[in-house]
Image 1 (cartoon, helix red, strand yellow):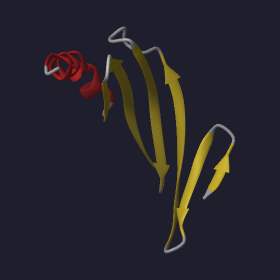
Image 2 (image 1 turned 45 degrees about the horizontal axis):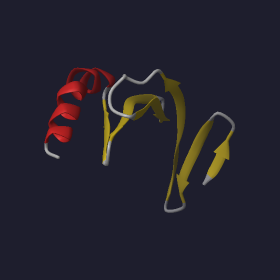
Image 3 (image 1 turned 45 degrees about the vertical axis):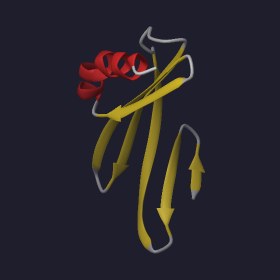
Image 4 (image 1 turned 30 degrees about the horizontal axis):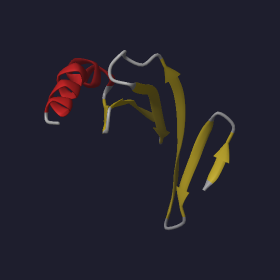
Length: 87
């Protein structure tokens, strides 16, 4: 693995193709006791994939949701409510 400033470059010795990953910290939703949110961009072979990762802790329940930004935004509130209601 090779680390670069502001991102990460990963390469497997068995597969010479590498990919770059950059992160952007975003304002988290105001859910639960603690939360954080990042936008991750993976770049390889001239293509980019963007993933939104959001973590919410409510008491002893920690929920991490990672998917396309639109899907995370669409389903996060319902997912947190369902996970915390099961306590």
